[in-house]
Length: 208
Image 1 (cartoon, one colour):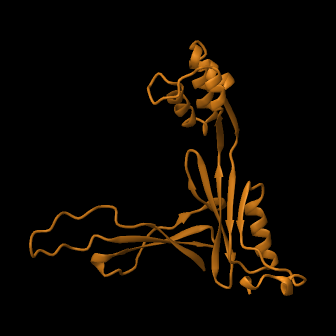
Image 2 (cartoon, helix red, strand yellow):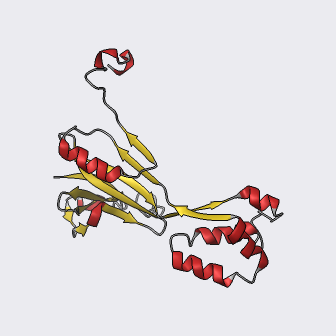
Image 3 (cartoon, one colour):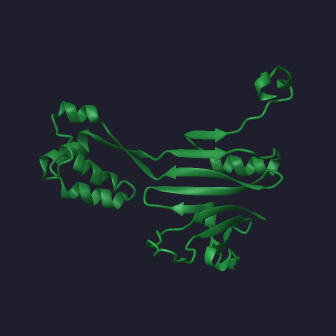
């Protein structure tokens, strides 16, 4: 059993048809189900084949990682709501804080030009996920006064933030264990609460 979601649909616009002409359907969808075997079970459905199921290769999902980008990771865990459902966590790898008040105090420009501090800060943003690249960038700019000043006075590299999302689940021990593991150390948690037996009679009428 798994949870289904869509990861792709029509990606191109059809050409302008001639009067009276009929074009083959270009719409297609890739559907994925995350299963307990930690793999995405995939299939393609195309308009031109009347949406007949076309099985695709399985994609392993180690540690529930659905997406691993330069700056962030998206994880999922399979949960139970009498039917399969998913909980998600979005984790930023590193986070760069730019203190704009320091830029103003130092009288540094913040426009879009290539010589401005913001242009260099933007390049630093692109390297925060790679500490080695960040160190190389800093070494290259040690002799350049404005960039050396920005690195020392304006930038702060801190651990990335984590946002978790879990709703519509049944309460039992295995669900609780998986949820706790997924949301551990989250900075922000979106979660559907439930009323305890002691407070059920006192809950607002709007929630009944």
